[in-house]
Structure formats: structure tokens, C-alpha cells
Length: 604
Image 1 (cartoon, rainbow, N blue to C red):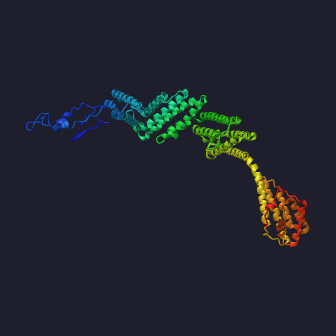
Image 2: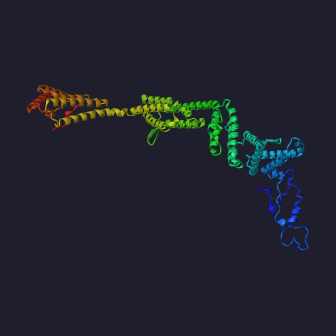
């Protein structure tokens, strides 16, 4: 900005013209004589050469033209409002310095009136400039100068307070209040008449159009304040926070009026999004310049809580209805005999995917809309009962056992895994008690599905368990008859008896628990244990005969190997027992081919 009030010093003389009592430049009567005295008379002296205007040189007066101090009217015209204010303050100081008594005011009324009129002109122009603050065509230099003028006026107010005496009628000027009220009026006008929305408003209610228009105007204006208007103000005026406070108070008051009336679900959701999501996002982007925490909430708790409750109830109802529909559609497919879809050769179901997507979307949105994770989590409380319904559906599939039952159960297992993964990895979506209950239900579903799908395998495994039971018992007897252990006395025989009896019971319990039905294997080991314990030869003969009755494939070699464990028996005793066995087998002459045992125990 060019400056017109600077004076030029030349040879010790000030070339600025004197001011009249109104602060305007005077006629400068003595200026011409001073120039003549400094540079010579206007007439050519006889002894001095004449200065020709055509000698190629300009006169000293032409070389250094004097600057003229701008008048108050020129300052107004050029929008140099700070300088205009300073001129008025200087006039005020001169004028009221001369006025010591109230009576003297009468003699200066005309000058006071002229000064007051000039102040009103300046005030009107400052208000005009302030009203341009939020427009793209705002004159930045003029606004900066207006702000400085306001600050100067406030300083002058303070000077009058300090000095006492009789101040002018316009003191205190309170131009900072004028500044604030002017900008508040500007803000109100813009918020009541926001720019039309750029996007379509076909599907929006009048309330949504109104709120969105105000919100977008607020966002646009505050961004302009931060980017442009702030540069015209000193930091200590905190202009960004002032604008933010004015817009916040207006927006809050308007939303309170809206919230006091009953709103439909869509309008309720829209209002909550502005209060808890969109508006905080706007302020957060301007956080470097605006203290958003000092602004507080747009709506008080007594208005906000009913809106949040209405929103959460609607979303919970939507969640329950949708999940119920998904489960019902799955049941209908099963009832019709349809098979689930296949992916990579595996049966799959969209039940878990559809439900998980819905839960994630609703809860994630609710956290932003109500601004409270705990409240948003409570939306999933119906999930426990809904999973119970899913489990009941699975139980029905297994009970009725239709041709498509197994494919559905296999698909359900995939759903169970996906549900479990979400409950574990996205735990922030659920309250702790809901999460634990749902995991328990899913675990039961998994176990029952496995049991159902493996039932046929279990039947086969039970036959295999019986075979394994026989194989283990045969191997046990084979190792026993190898003769690596010798029982040298009665105590050792009793100990061997107890060991074999205990092993017989352990093997029996283990395999029976797994489904084996080969109870007779236990009796074979018990009778072998009895032979090891008995001391009388007749008793030994009877026990061997009993063992042969159960196992007709018992041979002399097996009996001889068993009796050799008892070192107190002579060779003759062993022969007697084997002869008894031979007679018994000859008399019965039967072989239970259904349960061969000793024929599979190879001895030397």
C-alpha cells in the first residue's frame, strides 16, 4: 500500500504544509518564500547567470517535489482506515486539550460536531469492510487497516479512562463490541441463508437439507477464516476462536430447537451424525487454530440421550430382524432339499458372512454416531439368542437326517469358525458377557456337528477298537510266554499274579471305554494269572482245563511255556498238566473258530 503521509526533509526544512485545527492541510502561505530564500529569488540577479529552462537541468524544486499529508477524506476513499482513525484521534486530542471546563464546550460545538460526523463516517465504513470479511472479494488490506483502527480506538478509550476529566460524548467508543456484533450479524445472515447444496437433495427431508446447509456453510466459513481472515488480525485477538464460538452458538441453538420436537428415525440418525461425527470432524481439521474442546457439545445431555436411545433401539431391532431373516432363509433351503453352495470342493454357507457384515457395519457406525463404544456394543446383545436359534436349527438338521443334512452341517461348521474368529479378533464389537456366551454356544455346535458327521466313522472305529484290543492282549501274552521272567519262589508268583491281574483290568477299562466289546480277553489274562499263583498241581490242572475250554486253540507249547515261568514245577509236573490238556481237548474235540486267540500267539 502506498503511503501518502510521509514528509520529506530537505536542507533541514519540513516541506509538509501545516494543518488547520480540523487536521486538514493549510494553504501553506510561507512555503513559497522559504523556497525562494533557500534557492534564490524569483528574479534573475545581474551578477548571476540566468537559469534557462532549456539548459538541460531541472530546478531543485522540480527535482525533489514535496509529499502532501493525506486528508481524512482521502484516507476514507483509499480505505486507509487506520490512518483515518489516527487523524481523528489527533484532532480529538488537540480539541479536548483546549477544553478544560464544561463551558468551553459551547465554544467548540461546531468543531466537535464535525469530528463526531467524521467518526460516524469512519465507523460506517469500518462496518462495511467487516461485512465483506467472509466474501472472496474482500479487500485484505482494507480489513487489516480496519482491525488496526478498532484497536487504536480501544487504546484511546483506555487512555480516557486513565486520565479522567470530561471525555467526548463518543468515549468509550466500544468499537470491539461493534466489531463483534457486526460479525455476529454477518454470521447469522449467512447461516440463515446458506449456499445451496451442490449434491442432490431429492431423497432428503427439509430438516436434513436445512441442517446440511448450515453445516456446510459453517465448514466453508471457518476454513476461510483460518486461511484468509486470520491474516488480518493480531494473534491476541484470537479471531478464529471468536468465529468458531459464534458459529457454534448459532448452530447449537438451531439444533436444540429441532431436537425438541419428535423426529423420525432417518432424521434422528442424520441429526446425531452431525452432532457426534460430522461437526467434530470439521473442528478436528481446524484444531491447530481453534480450541474445539472449549466449545462444548452442540446438544445438551437431556436432548442428546433420547435421540441416542431412539437410534440404538431402531438399529437393534433392524439387527434382530435381519439375522432372523437370514436364518429363516437357510432353513427354507434345507426344507426344500437344496444343498449348500460349494467353493473349492467344500460346502459353504453365507449365513455367517451376512450376519458378520451386518454386525460390523451397524456397530462401527454406531460408535461414530453415538460417540460411545459401550452403547454401540450393546446393540449385539440379541446375538446370544439368535445363535441359540442357529443351534436349534442345526439340532433339527441332525435329528431329521435328510439327504442334504450332512452337507448343511458341513457348511455350518464353516459358519461356526467364522463366527468364532470374529468374536476373538474383533472383540471390541461385543460386550464381554455376550462374547463369552456366544463362544460357548459355538463350541457346543462344533462338538455336536463333529459327533454327527463322525457317527458312521465311530461305528467302524468301534470294530477296529475291538481288533486292537485283541492285538494288544495277544502281544501281551506272547511277551509273557517268552520266558524272560522266572518266578523262583511263592512270593514272586504272587507278585506276578497281581501284576497280570492289574494289567488285565487296565487294558479292559481302556478299550471298553473306547467302544470295544471284547470282554472275554480279560478272562484269559485272569486265568493265566491264576496259573501263576497256584501251588497245587491238581489246582493248576483244573485252571488250565478251564482256560482251554474258553480258548480251544490253546496248545501244549503254550502250556509248557506258561508252566516254565514257575521254576518250582518239575518237568514231570509240566508233562502231567500237558497230558491233562490233551485229554480234555480230545474229549471236547471242538474249536471255537469265531474267537481264535492262542493260535495267534507264536511260541518256540
